[in-house]
Length: 320
Length: 320
Image (tube, rainbow over all chains, first blue to last red; front, side):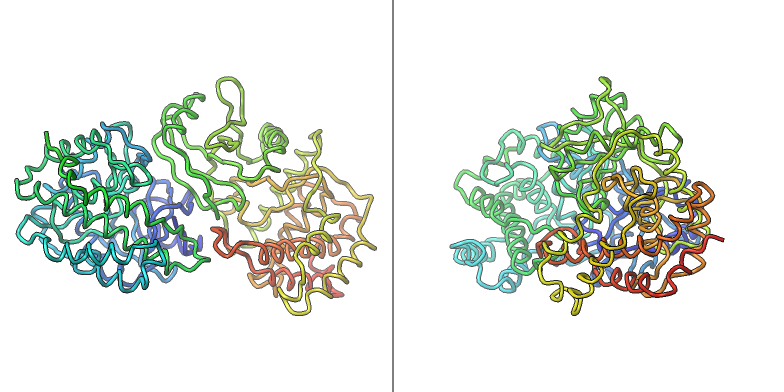
């Protein structure tokens, strides 16, 4: 959750005046997005999300994100459209930040999805993968496997985060380096499709949001990230076979994963669990104690990693 | 800003089902209110603010606040109505908190109000005072003058907050004790009508919100609080005579302050400046460094206090 930047009402009115969306009726900072400031903006022309981008690195990537959302929206994916001003410009400036006005989508983020909702999320991920297949831009996955060792090193002594974690991570990094696949299908993926980033009404997906980690990587790795974030208990100790099967069946309704891809899903899921374990450990150590961001406990992803390391982990990815 | 409590979507659906407002379409935590969790809730029946009350003391006062808002709404004041469920109940439970569903009002909070907007705010305060005159409930002002010494003592060494502050506060408390009026009109007042708590569209007040400090006190003290919060530069060093005159004229259009009340406005404004200086100093010292709440710098209210102490302070309250 985060609202970092104050937006002056006069500046807001000037920004809104660039668009064909009427005048401001309401603007409230919302507790969404970890790295950006988000506002729910209502005008006489409708409702919108106003996002201010707080980090320099993301600002350079903004044209990629705008193109990606345009591409997906044009193909019927339930992603928020980037709104253009009268001159066709999507990326604006306000309060000394780059900013975009984005379509408001209904729906709420689930805390404890049902099997039906896991099925719908899997299908929405699969449909997004089909739609992105002919997207021509690429973006390096700065949170992909090649970067995990660097995240671990930048965290410092991992045993200070969780006792014994350093050896676990060293072993896992060596294992993944030796076994990570190289020749399975890749394209731009969401890479962070946690329940927070899916809006639903009942069993219907109304929005896939927060594409700011989207990057080029294995499509099966996106399935693994979604599996790791949708099918476990909050503490990461238990994976629901029923939820996992529903997620897989939903995805496979849209995308026919190859036997090679299905075979490496447990391995990719180990990678996914390690990725979030490491970034949470890193943020745990480096988030200033007075930050407005809530630090997330890394241990539920250590528990997931252990589950995916188990000899019977393939059973968590049953496709029928 | 604050969203403290997570609301489970299933619990939210169950709460909404108690009301005649349809089903949930969207629910987003908003960065408003310092001591409560607030959500902007959209249902098929409209938009609402869902407030969860985080502090025990407020929960006991909730019936007072509900009655007050009902009273003001019935008299046409632009305050958010408390929504009743099918059984007529306004105060609910969710996520182990007391909670109310409250009417959503359009408008935005101003950062730098114009003279016209200060006039409108003064008039809205005056109209609210006329409407509250026959409100029969009372509530002790737990942030009123009788409590300032206690706040100062609970803060500890004030010189650690701002050098020299201890002596300034000691002198001011003694002065106010000796000079505070006793026989001017009192009733329930807002007591915290900062620009944050007024929603406006252009020069029209669309909402007076956040009545959680409302209590029984001098009506002229409410004018003083509003003066202190609407007519100064952000740093508290400069009071705009034009803004102050507009505020006073707007208020006096609705309420005829007596000469006695007008004469004590500079004194009451010293009290108002001291009240926010002390509570900000207290929170500065006592807010945990990892809290999600932004601590507010006390010094702009020390600067206001100095301005109100000046020999020519009466000129800031010209009524014609």
